[in-house]
Image 1: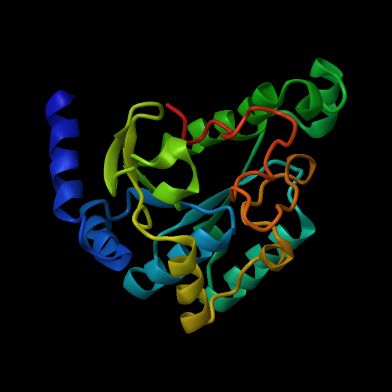
Image 2: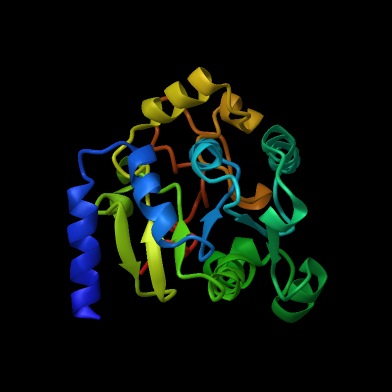
Length: 233
């Protein structure tokens, strides 16, 4: 495993000066048929949908449907499907094993207000663990400047938590880079971004941020929590 991690780091380091499209062009052939894009339909992820579509339109995506997504997020999903002519088999809906009603019965109403980590585990981390078992690599929209916990993200790395290769093509990009791409290529995006929501998750745990605030300041307000657990070792 140490050798594998070292090989991935060496590969990642060799791409450090490259653009996200170059990272994808290197990764897609190697893991053809065995990789998937994690898509929340936020700004970074719709950029990746567009980039991947230009290189290999057969690559599937999945989204974690927590049952608490914004209406705008579902609408963005539908626009992406239409724009890129995605087949039903290419858009994988992944849900919790518990309906919201069963979760409330087992853990109490509004679990996210009392134990947000447990809620994320049930509605995000466990479903992600299930879907990733069918792949050798996954692609994410992580950027280094999103949060201190992501500052060390490589382009290609071993994800020990889920046991597969993790690819972060946008790691070196800034928020401005993302929006330049969206505007140049007219990529459909979540309209909540225009209403001061830089990071969009569940309705109960996402709020708009003030100008100058950390882009993830609107997630889990009133908690020290900053990550849902998908990208936390």
